[in-house]
Image 1: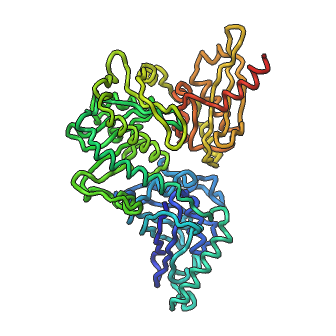
Image 2 (image 1 turned 90 degrees about the horizontal axis):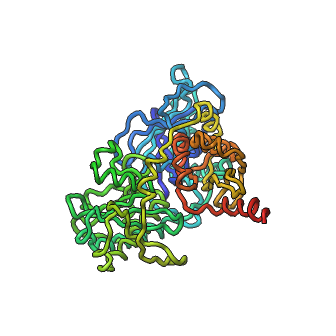
Image 3 (image 1 turned 30 degrees about the vertical axis):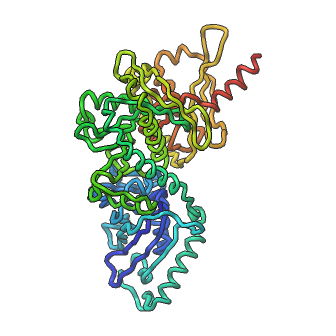
Length: 528
């Protein structure tokens, strides 16, 4: 999505503001570069963002800033442990509704001295889809030049834009400067999400018409196997009891464990996060929707009418409730909603639906059998014994020390590529099966790390320790921290404590094609 921000420079004798359209997926570090460019700051001073309103809620003590290694002049920073790293945090992580606000402070190293700290009030004015052919960021409006840095807050006559023509010329100059200085940031933003969100909204209407809550209770759980990741989506229809109409989708083994805990002990057992590892579709009255909910419906031109019939999409994947805004989460929810409709259209299935919490631990599943557009699914009965037991058996603790974590955090760079990490056993003639550690990009297949661990008996002494150490070595070889790592369920459980520390999401996949192919080429085919 594209945000139009109005940025007001505070405490000047004449108003100074800029309007800028930006990609909401940019980081705060990139936003800082943009602000320094459009206000013509020199870029050599320290800064921070303070979030004051996020997704419609007032916020306190939420600061986003550079780490020490990214400060240009390497001056010491008094940084609270709860401060967020601007290189990692996206704008949409905290700003997502119209009228959300933040304060950008520049030249803060001199806030207790005589030099001026420049404060910029940032307000989200519009949320919209990107326009084809437009390069973002793009300045759409401006008023007056800025005063001389650290000298005075007073604007001179020469710094005023007195006519519309002068204001337009200022905007033109700003856009030219953006393209000259920020060529690494300037780009056309593809509107991949438009079609996806429109399809999700359309299927949401079909789901509402099917009214599955009339025949299914929330304990009547079924699963959908995601055709992209092979992840199991455990689905619970909402609305047969006192809860709102909707659908809860619990993701993978962790989601299933959370669903079991929730159904047995209630939402209160999770504190601030009542539905961990969960995506939700909820229906509510029109006036209960957020501005972002309304904007999503309006921009996709999908009409909704009636009481308790307006959709809200919510995510509990990484903490307390937030509006659903990641395309991957929207895709997963679309898969679940679409297959839920198919189950409702086959009354015979509902009569024979096994209970997920019975001794047999079987569940009705929708399983992809043929790729294409659309993907073809079939019905199956899935044994989920391993899903129910795994989270408790393989619960691991953090095995690496703080110095190791600091080394990884200092890498700084982030990569958007999903990295496949595998600990593959190698076939052997004796009882000792060496482990082959692999790290590779699922985007282009490039192998960044491979290591044959020759002594599997050592691994058995402390499996979590050795897995986390191999994970650490893989990240060092990658020389970047990925946002997502794909691995198998056992490895996921063992490396999860370290991944959480580094804000890396884990995607559990039954098949790890790059690692499997590498093992085949290096060990099996050579042996033959």
